[in-house]
Every structure is written in C-alpha cells, then in structure tokens.
Amino acid sequence: MEKKRVLITTLGCKVNQYESAVLAGLFKKRGYQVVESGNIADVYIINTCTVTHLSDRKSRQLIRRAVTANREAFIAVTGCYAQVAPDKVLEIPGVDLIVGTKDRYKLVDLVERAIKGRGQVNAVRNYKVDEEFEEDSTLPLQERTRAFLKIQDGCNNFCTYCIIPFTRGPRRSRQPLKVIENAHMLVAAGFKEIVLTGIHIGAYGNDLAGDVTLAGLFSQLAAIPGLLRLRLGSIEPNDITPELVNTLSSSPIFCRHLHVPLQSGDDQVLQRMGRQYTTSEYNRLINVLRQNIPGLGLSTDIMVGFPGETSEQFDNTCRFIKRIAFSRLHVFKYSPRQGTPAANFLNQVEPPVKEERSHELIKMGHQLASKFATSFIGQDLEVLVERLLEGRGNNYEGFTGNYVRSVFPGDEGLCGKIVVFRAEKVRGATLEGKVTGLRY
Ligand code: 5AD
Ligand code: SF4
Image (tube, rainbow, N blue to C red; front, top):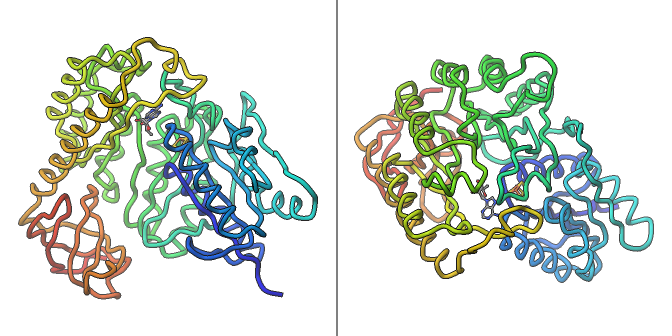
C-alpha cells in the first residue's frame, strides 16, 4: 500500500514551528510521508496562531486553502487559534478534527481514530493550574544546521494585551534531564547549533523542585561535546539575572545575541501594558549586558498603537530605540484580543495611526540593522554556514554568532561548518564577503 501523505502548515512563533517539527517526526515514525507545501496530501494539519487578528485571519485562510486543495483529504486544525476559538474553526466547512495546544503530540492517534469514526471531532481541552510539560522523545524534523529545542511552555505574566497565557496555559518547564537527552540526540543527528526556545524561557525552572535555573541548564548544555553554538530565544528583561549574565559571558559557545522584548519606550505605556520594568531599568540592564558581552547583538519586539498611546509617547519610544541602538526590531501593531484587559481600555488608537507608526519604526529598524552590520566591515567573523542560496550562483548564507546574515561564495562541503568570514560590504542588513579559513 502506498504511504499516506501528510502536509503540515505552520503559523506563528518558533515554539509553534518546533512543535510542527515534532509532529512531522511523529507522523514519519508512523509510516506517513511528510510532504512540503505545494503538494497534494491525504492529511492536512494546520498549526494555527492567534497573537493578533491578522494571525486569526491567516489561520482561517490556510484552513480553507487546505480544504480546497483536496476535497477528499482529512483536515486537522491545532494550535493557539484552535485552543481559544474552537467554534470559529469548526464553522469552516471541511474541518474534521480540532486539537488545541494540549495533547498536540497525540495528533497521529487522534487523526487515525477520527478517520475510522464518523463526523467532526472536537478534542480541545482546557488547562489545569498544575499542568506538566508535554514530553516528546522524537527527533523533530528540522532542516539545516540549526535546531530549535523547546525547554518550556506557557506563561503566568498576563501582560494586559496578550492572549498567550490563555492559549498555552500556565508556565511549565521541561525536566533538565530530558532537555539534555534531547540536546545529545540533536548533536548526534549532526546539528551544530541549538536554540533554546519556549514561551517564557526566563521562567525556566521556577515550577520545578530544587534549584533549577536557565543559567544552570545553559552550563550543562554548553558542556555537550560536539555542540558548537548555543543560542537563547526571546527572554524578558526581568529574567536576565546576574547569574545568567555571568554564565553567558563566560561561555565560549554562547551566540552573542539576545532578543529582549521592550514593547514601548514610554514608562506610562509600559505600566498600562503590565510590564514590570521602567525604561531606565531596561537601559541599565542593557548597559550591564554590553559591558559583559562585547559585540552583543540586541533585538527586540515593539508594539505600536497600544490603547491611549499619544504621539508624545510614541516619540518617546522612537527616542529610546535610537538610544539603545538595537540591532534589529520586530514591530507589531496592537490588536485587541478578546478576554484580555487592554481590549476594553479606552482610547483605542485608529488603524491609520497604527499603520503610520509601524511604518516609521520598520524603517528605523532597517537603518539600525544596516548600521549594526556595517560596524563589522573589515573584520574576520565566525559564521556557521547554513545553505546554498537559490538563484545566486555559488553563494551560500550563514549567520554570525551575533546573528548578522552573511553571504559569500562557497561550496557544498562548507555546509554545517564554522568558517572564518571576512566582511567586506553591506547590502541591506546582510554582510557580503569571502571565506578565508575553516574553524571547525
Ligand atoms: N497585538 C499586537 N502584538 C502583540 N504581541 C503580543 N500580543 C499582541 C497583541 N495583542 C506581540 C508582542 C510580543 C510578540 C510575540 O507579539 O510584541 O512580544
Ligand atoms: Fe502565536 Fe503566541 Fe501561540 Fe506562538 S504562542 S503560536 S505567537 S499565539
């Protein structure tokens, strides 16, 4: 019998992408053929996101697209949008099964059972207060040389704009032994770089017995033979402890880049967002980081058009961004999420104003990224070579430790190696140059 084909489509954050990669691994283990987008499949899985209303819309679009791609196919929807808006998903004609963010890794069984049964299945379940981390022991199907490793799920922060605590439940950490076991598996599979991901990785260990911290976990992982690079995903400013700064600054394999969400550069807005820091505290933290970690790349999330954001408050944000001189900005337009406090705040900002502010910051982000890359011209940098660029001759791309994209002529043998790259010029925010040596 021919293998059943499964196509997984993913929206949203790195954690969602990681979970889709695990799902792909699970389907493969069960004898399915995992096919890429653009192919026809027998089973479609849509892993949705709901962080803004645009994510909702895209999630619905992708579900409809799967339904029309093959009317005979089985359609399963999972992820954050399915968790918080099951009714909206079930309304879409052709959806056979929905599973939220819980029991995601039971999807293969649920799909097979639902195919045998009849009618639509709603398997979305609510979270308990003392939820445990949902383990997986499968090698996630990830391409390239960089692997994501999920160490944590959920969030208890409840920023006033954010739906995530409702979609992913309370914070919970993966057992350190399991993380380490998984990291060994990834290194044995040939990955050279691991990125620690989660919804709130700075809270790692808080819910576990004993003195478990992110810094401690990092040190244990950094000792794994064969692991050349270790990177941290997004981390909240308040979770960057002196212990963590020490651990990172003294580790030879730490990739010198951090993503520290700021959201706004105005203290009143930060307070209404329920963020637990002021701009001066944020500024002080960045100074400490830069003193201890030379060459640090620093990126951030900024939200524009939060309810009540005046043009003066937006100007404060612009000024603060320039003062910090981030290496990259991720700009979000505030989107009211049902069930969150800010959705009911007065003085919601008009869409054209959000559009204008977002446009301005995106432009500023490009300038800052280009300036950061330019500061490395003439230097020799270590780059992990990832892949050949399509349609660009023999040009390959890779990233420096501090996350500057680098492009250079090369050959297939370089993929997965760390090379010495001489940065010669900048195009956009990408460094161009040549390989002058091999490091590992
Ligand atoms: N509207 C717009 N952006 C949001 N984010 C989170 N919630 C919202 C919302 N309601 C952004 C934040 C966060 C990033 C992952 O998504 O900037 O850091
Ligand atoms: Fe989207 Fe947030 Fe869920 Fe990630 S956690 S998929 S960003 S809603």
